[in-house]
Length: 120
Length: 80
Length: 246
Image 1: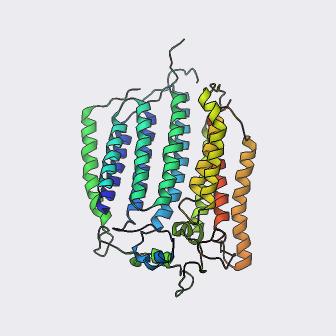
Image 2: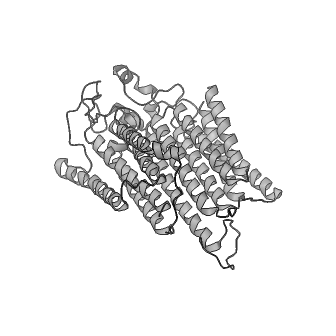
Image 3: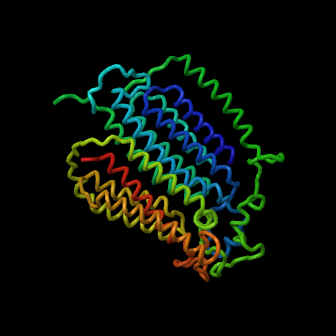
């Protein structure tokens, strides 16, 4: 089952990269960047998965007895902070997109600067 | 095992549809579905901490921020 | 808005990415020394062995359920994030602060009118705000016993303020949000400095003799998670206020 997780997260990353390369609308480029971010987080957590593993939370004495069937907790700890920082980066990119619309008066990336804008 | 294959197919199909479509509002809504499916994938990898965080932040806050920007960028409306 | 591009560029990009994707897949599975990730690697061959057995400081210690150990949180991911690798978490707090600082600088401040909300949203808003506060508070208080923690709790508490902003109820002013964010940020580092003077190393737990599985266990872990939750909630609420100036 690890194969399914690794293949799906890699294909998500490459679909997002295709979107960044070929689209012209700035908002759609930012959506594709977020899809790449989701794929990377999935890939990191899937490197710690073990077949038929259990959740790394202690609930009673018997979960201390089978400690070597637990899934690796270290990648989960790293991905937890990565998701929150991805949100901050997305907010910053959206603010830059609004600025771009004000100065160039169009949301496509091949707009020219010659026309006078009428402001938002 | 079949559940992870089904959720992976939904996720990849949704990501392909988001990039190809021409309407921006449709793309934002389908992006919320992709984020929710990735949260279910995190749960199938036995990581409930990460699943709660991705569901709260990806499907809730990021989609709300995209809709706020969409309203600021699309200014042309019909005059009443 | 339409965006169109030629068919040839699409096909060339697709083929290049496909070839690169196959190459990266073959390289990513190999962990070196001939072992692939898709074989079964147990945690005893990884770094996580010391975190699962809770014997980082002392090589032979074991623990029981209901007894004491060197780190008494029942959720092992929480003990990795807040106790064994707390330095990375504080650096993440600093990075988030700088990102929101840049956001507040770039966004254009203009005056917009807020549309009057509909009747259903107007009636339901106070109930939703109270519900979100309670759920967020429960999530970070039980961060060391069940999945959750400070980061999703901050996101959930900030949606309470988002609901208030969407219906025109200003429950908290922007100035007090900045004060909350500053005070919680300074408290995290000052607790670390106090623990340096008390025990000898930075961010070391100085509340001892807890039992695994209790509500009041985990030493300094619930305190740190509470401070992180309020800091993240204050920063995200600042984002909503900037998008909805009146």
